[in-house]
Length: 425
Image (cartoon, rainbow, N blue to C red):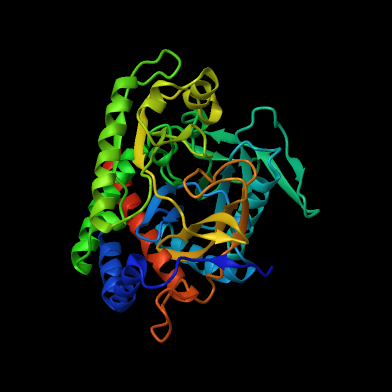
């Protein structure tokens, strides 16, 4: 579908950064290859990126991506190839995959993602069945999709230390369920089967602050090689624990950290001559789906929350209470599609960028959360541009811009691999 993409004018700090990355692409690719010799990337991941014109930063990394249906059709062959390589590296003898999705039988968009993911696995030469954690599903149940096809969900069957569905004993289990509500009994104590991703990648264990700690480590190494300020790629962050929005506990920790971070951002803005009002993002340290998030420009805002705002911040997916909170530097976006504010989301399988899309929201501003009801998705033309740049054209031209997005996303992927290594039980 034709669309008009607005990008910042050339000549600014971001274009200079893009030029450095493009000129160093051979060194960058060599560095990534050396990193993958020591670290195993997650099986798959998606990364939210914000382009502020003066800063290009990862703001979230999802290890259970749920938007494969939003990738462009011409990106799928690369996804199949990357998935085949990922399977071979982890379990070369595998033939059967059990896919365990979220329990969203009414979310047609998510179901389309499950269907796309299952199709990619099958095209990789695997036999795939879909097992569900929904207790009400006690027999194979077809679920109608919006394109007229069906998705067959089957109840899980546990046989000793192995998990499958009736008549199907898989070699590997692929989770597309982020385990926000904890690790189900059915998934505990599994032996002899590959669990992908590992259980400690789920939100019952994982914390965003741990990821951004690892991300900062990776960015510092990368920035040293390119001789750039790591801040242009890395958002400030802080944490507060034992927060209770209903009981108003932990407010002083939140207010103090917000004030300190806003001061740090103002200093950086003055150094670069950035004419923006700094803000921070306050969000749950665990969880996804854009829940439990608010933008704050003054610490007093966190003290003056009304009851509706406190209720919104107090719980996330699965109705879980929020007690650990991440305070993250806000990165505004300068990108827009057909006049609507946009941010890129990059998808990776193993170490390969396989595609992406713009998340766009016509009713949100450049300093607001776009992962909210009313958002739409537009595939990025990654099929020709996610692997290597075109040195003969402007650094900000589409192929080069998307290559740079892929580099930034892979920094987050490498950080996720470090994060999982450190959290391994």
